[in-house]
Every structure is written in structure tokens, then in C-alpha cells.
Length: 310
Image 1 (cartoon, helix red, strand yellow):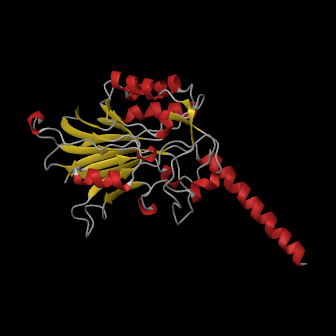
Image 2 (image 1 turned 90 degrees about the vertical axis):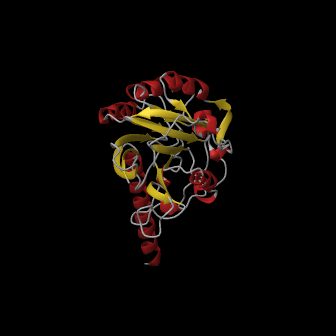
Image 3 (image 1 turned 135 degrees about the vertical axis):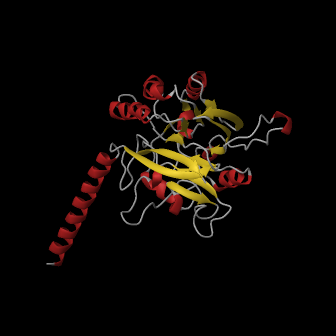
């Protein structure tokens, strides 16, 4: 009797696991648009629509993802921010540029992630849960065309924020920008403040852009006076527990802020006790590693942020 009961329990557990895995494969293709409003602009300013895309991890022939990204241009954003990890295959650049093409005519800014520089490599999925802050398993002998991607984005007019500062005109606003290279690969070098004699006048917004939201990066951007920081990398936890949330962030950010709009270092700036915090938006991203092609309780996403007066 005990053996029969144990067998039934094991069978039920196996069926539950198989069903969860099957759903995880389905959910990775349920692309979702999130919309949030952020009060960061000066009083009386016109709203600014910012499209945040991240972590496409695109491989050739992902036609559904390519079509979905292309359709985002129909949102008519004023500014596009791409926070990296666009590629997951050495031959994907033409497909990626096809996906981004309708958006490249919009003012934009970008940084790179590890899977823009190097192809992902096979790894034990449990490593993601047990080695939370270690560098990713990539294949340095199999580099991705990061230089060609960056050149194409710059040629289209997007601003490269790899450890540098710049400004952009978007939606009738002049915006100052600061960005860093991928902190997960220790490539981040926060740029020095611009000399005072290069100041070109007031800006409506100071925007920080990073791939991986490590605490050192967020602290530096908060100290720099950014109004809003945008990052990706976490995949929102990718495999989450329903009604609980993410188990990991793949960096030293707490799981409570693994995705969505929050404040740094404290609560959201409009919440009690949040005075002096910087708005932070972390995208759960649109893809997965080809070696872990599932999402559970964490749909792939892009986000349209509507920035409004404080």
C-alpha cells in the first residue's frame, strides 16, 4: 500500500513538472506590452513616451518575436531605450536589424549586454539558482557582432551610451543621458561629469541607462542626479513562483525589484519615506537563453513609459 501511494505521488509530481515545463515553453512566446506612468518631468512639461526594450536574445527564424518587435513602432514612442542582450546567435544580426528597423527612425539610446558580445554557452539550469552573481557562462571563442550592431544603431542616429554621456532631443524635450557598459562582465566605468564649459543649457530629464542593475551602478546614477534609471538583464526572474515572485535576479539587486517601476535606494519617490529616491525601471525582457528556453509566471515584455510632470 505504501509503495503504491508513493508511486502515485511520484507520478503526480512528474505530471505536474511536465505540465509546468510545457507551459513555460508556451509562456516564453506570450509577448506583453506593459504601460506605466512616471512623474519625472518639470511642471508644465508635455508628456514624453519612452519605449523600453531589453533582452531579446534573438536567434534566426524567431519570426513571431521579430514581427512583435516591429509592431512596437505603432506605439509612436518619442524615444526608444535598448538596454542590451539583443543577440543569442552569431548569424542573427540581419534578423535583429530587421526587427529593429521600424524603431531606428525614432530617437534612441542603447547599451550592450554580455549576449551582445559573446554567444551563450550550455550550462546547468540549477547554476542560475545557486550562483546568483557570478559572471555568465558565455563563449569568448564565439564572439557576437557587437561592433557591427553598435555601428548600425549609431548610423541610424541612436546614441551609444557605453561608459559615456550625451544628450538627445525627443518629443520636444532636451534630455541628458549617462550610461555604462555591462556590469555583469565588469565592463562598467561610470563616466566623469561633463566639464561645466560644455553645458549647452537646461534639460527636462536626466536619464541613466544600464544593462545590469547592479547596486554599484544604481548608486552611481543616483549620486549623479538621474531622474530615471532604465535597465534589463534580470529577465524578471524568468522562472517565478506564482503569488510569490522571483527567486533570483542574476545580480545583487533584491528580488523585490526584479522588474517593473521602483525607487532607488528606497521606495518609489511618490511613496511615504521615498523622498530623495530615484525612479528605476527594470525590464523583464523579451527573450531567454536558447539553452533555457522557458518562462514561468513571468511573461516576456516591453514597456511603454509615459513620463509626465512631477
